[in-house]
Image (cartoon, rainbow, N blue to C red):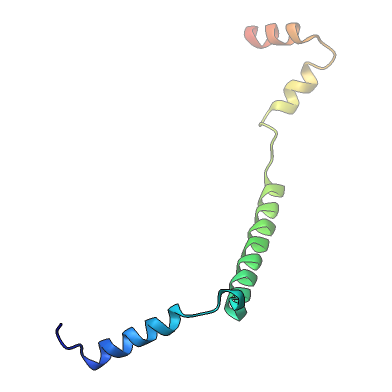
Length: 86
């Protein structure tokens, strides 16, 4: 087997120590908490922005209020016939 350089030997020794850990003691740690907190803040901000944008949306079509007041009190069949004629 060819000789390994010192850096390759050092890298392999680090991989071995990373592979030997107790699974019962494995926790997400501080980094996991920070990632979760950042994601939670991002979702909160996106929901707040979405709510703001949805409040600005006008769901009524232009001119639909005029048609509603014009057809008020008439049966639906009469209203559709008037639209076809006009």
